Each structure stands twice: as structure tokens, then as C-alpha cells.
View 1: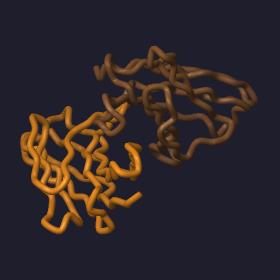
View 2 (view 1 turned 180 degrees about the horizontal axis):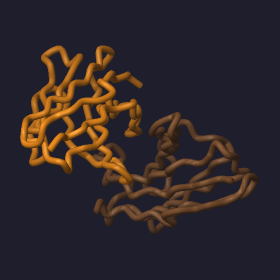
View 3 (view 1 turned 60 degrees about the horizontal axis):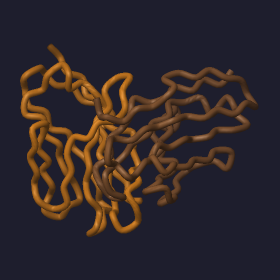
Length: 112
Length: 111
């Protein structure tokens, strides 16, 4: 158990819909990262937040957005969902902006 | 982001050492070498990391070539629980902490 929690574990929705994935970092960790893992693209970095501020951006689509709240939990919002958005979404946290990352168990999103 | 090259798959017998290679010929002076592994149906798990010198921890050892263009993750005694996809990742602290995962090496441990 990494100490990073993600909810929900599974999510099934339809194309065009919007969903929110939630991540609670390890106690004391200030940085949160979001990754997407699909069969054809592998693990891809989406975005990083540090203490509430966006720190780095990867291959995140404009339909996706994220934020980190004052209590340090983070949410990833996915809108106008497409079939290709079906994937595992992982959250990771680290103590600093450059520390070792600890990954959560992931949220499996299925878009029908 | 510098690229890493790993074999797609490897096999090892249980209780024998495993050497997982990684090539990173375009590594820069500020790139750290990280290894993570992903067990089936789980998120990636930290294994070890280093910059220039060889590193040991309770899970594994990391051997880094003198020119830093390659590295090897060493599992001293493979167990069935070590069956996973192993990722070698370069991280430049100067440009951020995001990890760029390649395809990794799928390790099969044979009982």
C-alpha cells in the first residue's frame, strides 16, 4: 500500500459525458501527478501540481483539467468523453516537487 | 526528455539473479536514472534510482556504466512476486519531476 488513494476504482460512462477522478496523496506529500495508461499509448504523464499550483504539463488534452485543493487532494476532470479516453488513470504523489513518486491503485475508466 | 531502450521481455528462474538492462545513450549530466515496476493490476512501484554511482537498497541494486549511457537493474534472487513490467526512466530535475515511461521490460519468473 503506497498511501495514495484514488476513487472511484471503476467508472463506466458514455461518450460525451463528464467525470471527475479523485486522488488523496500520502500524508505530508505536497506534489501530485496524474498519468494515463492505455493499451496503445502506455503510461503517459498528464500534469503535476505542487502545493496547489500547476508545476508541469504533459500530454494533457484540452478537454481534461485538474486542480489541487488546499487540503492537497487533487481532482482530474475529463469532459466530452470519447471512446479513446478509456484507460487506467493513475495518481502519484511525492514529498517535494522532485521527490520519489508513489502511485495509487488507479481508476479504470470505460467510455461506452 | 531523454529516451531509454529496454528489451521487451526477459525470463528468469526463481531464486536466481536477474540483470535487467537499459540503454540511455542521450542521457544528460543532470538526468537521474529511475527504475519503477508495475505488477499486474497495480500502479507503478518505486524500485531504485541513482545519478552516477552504483546504488543498493533492500529491493535491488543499480549498476550505472561509467559513461552513464547504460544501466542495469539487478534483482539478487528473483521470486514469483518479482514478475512485473520494469521501467527504466530518466528524469531531469532541472525541467521538472514528470516521468516519461517507455514500454518497459516484462519479466517472467519461472518456478
